[in-house]
Image (tube, rainbow, N blue to C red):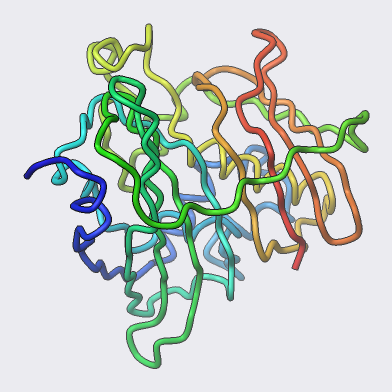
Length: 283
């Protein structure tokens, strides 16, 4: 396929179906921080089948269409997740057939050998009744491409966090085996586990899945706001501004304005911001 902005915009992203089981929900929750303290009964509800509660960001792994961009001709080895937005219409139901329908929103070309950004939207709903579950807008940075032109309408930029000291902070330790666990949710990209694949993509070691750090952020926001873990989220979004490596500690800095939380995630040991322009809305 000839790589062009229009060919990517017109690409028929496949539909996908998924029946989320209790095991799926518990595995996902464990892979993004829930259950770190097995004696914390509040968090136990996310990882124990008795009175099981779906993690707010669970929808990110539901009915994913797979590595479809690989079929468009982009340099798949150099593609990374750049930005993610999740709007939660209702908690992911268990043992209910779900379907996702996706479409490409935009291609933003930065020029030959400068890369491009591809944004697409994924709508998740029940198969029977077509009840909306979540809307996801994902932007990928195709670092090995560019020069193919731009097309479509890009999402509005995420707003910067406030220029003042955060209202509170929350530290999250990422286990050294976090990527090995998170990949069992379905993202088997070797970039996250294979040192050779990471090297060919320009990294000196495997990096953590962006959506794993995103899930940890969702967990940390709820834990910081409500230690009882009863608060939900109706939306969460962030830009992946730098890679994070398994074994590091994320310090989530948060600014609260009623039900809206602005946030960013930093790795103090390296002095880098790994999540930026973050926004979450409490349900």
